[in-house]
Length: 116
View 1: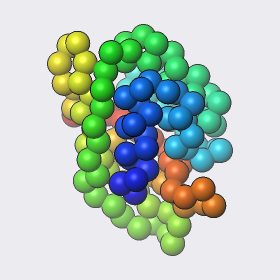
View 2 (view 1 turned 90 degrees about the vertical axis):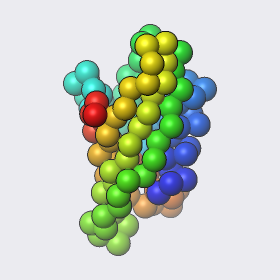
View 3 (view 1 turned 180 degrees about the vertical axis):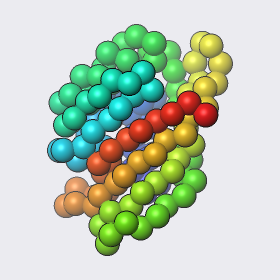
View 4 (view 1 turned 30 degrees about the vertical axis):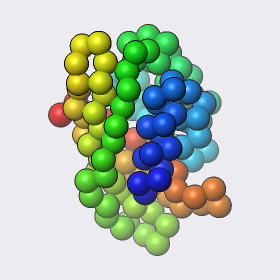
């Protein structure tokens, strides 16, 4: 699980929307803190690209795994703490994630970030 979070954060910190979206399953979804819904890697990449060309352009992130709960053999519910450091200071977020293991490893099925 921590490797998946690290992969996402590394992509965030270079503002690579396609690499961030690669962390999701083909049918995964995201609801941003602004309420924007995206389903599938292409939509998720598009939403993240817009955000990282705009308000998130000068940010860096870190993420810590807080809790893991087993839902099924290849399914976990994660709680993570995310810190986004940018021109306006550090924003702390709590992120609820559902992850599934497939041939490519663990990937997000859904992500629901919320400002803590």
